[in-house]
Image (tube, rainbow, N blue to C red; front, top):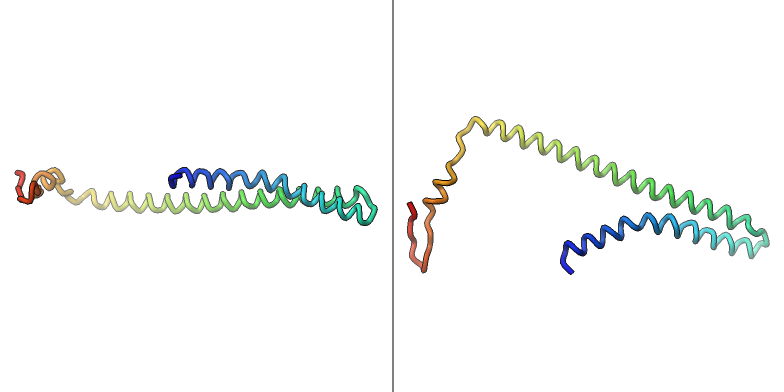
Length: 121
């Protein structure tokens, strides 16, 4: 598996973790509540309370992860905009300077063929 496929697979697992959080948190809390209810004979009090507490916790976790990701993306976007502005200002400053004739540099470069140096003019 190449690096691109591994990265895509990792990103897919990371994106799907929110779904697991939304399902597993409430289910595990409800099972804990069911166990407490069976031990204290208060069915379904703890099952329902812990189910809704698990659901609220899972929703908050997904929300705050989303929010943190959006803040990181916004910071990255601002950094890219600042870099773009810096590069544009640098390019504008270089616009007054003559640029090197790259075609002349490429055609006058030494070419080595079979160990002998030739100058192409």
